[in-house]
Image 1 (cartoon, rainbow, N blue to C red):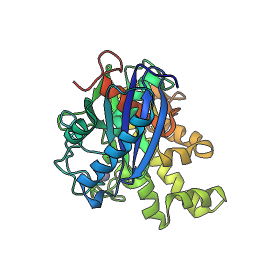
Image 2: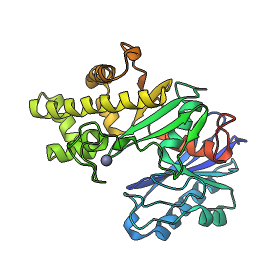
Image 3: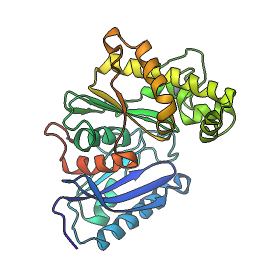
Length: 308
Ligand SMILES: [Zn+2]
């Protein structure tokens, strides 16, 4: 087996599952991977134990010795300490951080970051826009959130809450998200919004629309319109070189719905974006946040980027 010098362990914690990988940070490739359920309601310590075991398993089976561990997670969290701050999808985890337990167990330096922020970092290093200094990664999935790289730095905000663009109001008085804001982007265009509006899972609505069901088509068209409005707001605020989309709903919008998404974004955006809306799908698939976690842990992103 070949050994890799810049091998870094990475983890990605979501509400449903936790993924772990060994990343070749020079090549941007995954050398090994594994997965376990999160079961957030079973408690923070049980999840930490499962993730630790998963990471140990990967490290022990590899010929390359990892130099650090990066953890990407759903948030919000304090980017300095990795402590959760009332995470809506990880109930009971407020005020906790896995960092100390993982440092003790693995004997490696550990950094923790927000999943969308780390995905944005990965895009600037391994995606289609390598070296970009101004890039937004927008995940359109069960929820909607963004990772922001601006002026060559990851933007996390004063409380780790930057990038919560899912709560930009795009339809005042419209459908509410789980946080209760009415007509926000997440309340109108996320997977959970499509499911709530349609009374059926978002995947089923995409399949029905594909089969020509006019009601389902209308629901997707509305989601596309509001997503276009949200994208226009992101462009106006940050002037990124590109907004990279990822997540299950974004994948559903590829192909048939993509031209109308660009059209709607162009319709709401400033005139300078006419016919040239810088919105693209990720080329990194589901691995963007794992790759970003590895970069975060080593400070191996562009010079100005990193956790400190
Ligand atoms: Zn909201």
